Image 1 (cartoon, rainbow, N blue to C red):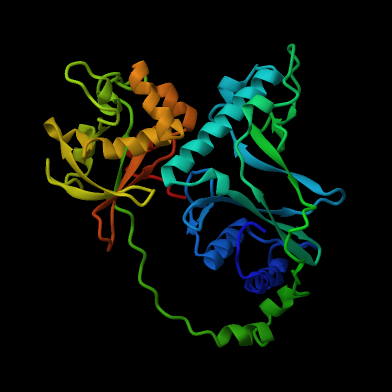
Image 2: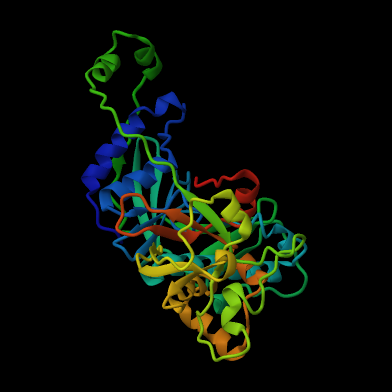
Length: 403
């Protein structure tokens, strides 16, 4: 397998989870919650858990590898299974009406853009990224792993000709096979499960008659539970945060990115500027909503990026309307790499005088960032990308769904 973890410990934990499957399901194959598999993988490999974030990866393994974690039932026949790897509900309007060839190309582009953006955000090496799959059947399961790859746009077959439009077009890039459901706006990937380096079969027993045991106060199950010692745990501190838009909020009817200010300040006329010389807007309403959240204007603080880099930052300009780093290009170099899927792609904008537009934010599904106050850390604040539409949610409700 690609990852290196204690398969014996994995099997023991899996056996425990499968044993209580009868509480939720009558299927012969144990029902294993996907969240359990994510937590199990991260715990055994000391990986960073991203599964509750709106990103393409569920974990970061060995500090560099993005991991997509899945669990599904083994196919009843054959040695492969199509599983969901991406959803395009937000882009459904722009995809509707496209013929198969145009649809496949656009879906592949959107899929790649999102993966490259998330990889850049966290400093993930795509060449080392992989899928970790727990494949379940009656009485047992096994772990299957394979590379997590971009779609090769130049090798898509069939390339598609004419105006054919089918409910579920299929395609390949020579490395992987995919299908797209128009009705569900979902991209499926074909996982080949007959690899020789899969894990051994892992037992997934199910306790027979678990409900009578659960309901009998004198059962061995209750005796085991009664021996447990419950210790008080400290309450989890609530996130102290605001959402900052990456676009101008001046236009109340249409989202736009100002061509010469905000994240496009590098494109302004006048003195020679370097790429990355820009800022993230801080609208006045945020200061009114959270008057005690922000540091004073020009007061420097330590800001941690998702890559682990810590940059010295401050609020500046009139009304503390700009979040900047010092040096000025550090923060937005990370941001631009995230939007464009890499810093080299982003830097080409300077010579071409090609400022960011809202369409660039739509393409990667990111139009805002989360600024969080750090708790018991050496740095003061943390920054990460937020879901599309998060700023409007925060302004209207004062909340953000971190789940």
